[in-house]
Image 1 (cartoon, one colour):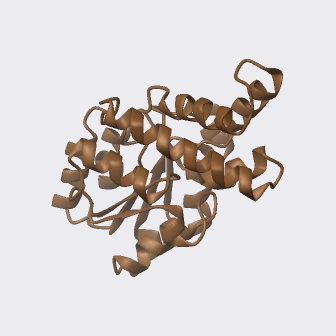
Image 2 (cartoon, rainbow, N blue to C red):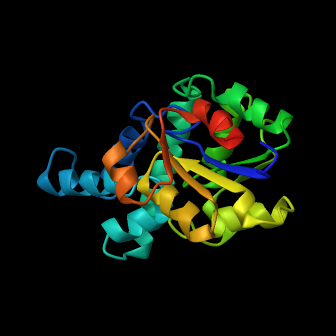
Length: 225
């Protein structure tokens, strides 16, 4: 793995099991701004949430609520609160083998950045629940990078903060088309999808994934070439 300096890994669906938590938190959040679950409007919005998995959540809510910033901010706060409550209830678990994979990457000299479309409070709640506060070299949320996925900012911020000197030495991995687009737009040599989360092989390949992995556990072997 000596040719690679950095792995930028998504959290929910890639290194952290989702198990429907995003949809459940969304249901609570969208209800808080007056969209009734079970209605046609709700189902349309839920479909959009699925299609845009991986994107910054505040960006998703702005699109869903026709640019109404006040309602979007309220929905985003409700989402973050609901997701944090679910984590606090113990409904947060790692993808099998993810922690060992991250440790193996770092032991081989590959720095690891964990990224998310959630805000920092939710990201920290997940890291705390899993005991991962010091697992990676860096953790980033969209507000700390400038823009969320599918923009390249999360990857480029990780590159700058961790002193990586060649974007070709970067691997980006996530479970959504937006993760793949982020990797491609950043110039990373690997923009891989995994099949443990929101999007299937067809969606990942359509986004231009350089590789599609069964899970994050296959990444070390890929980097070894």
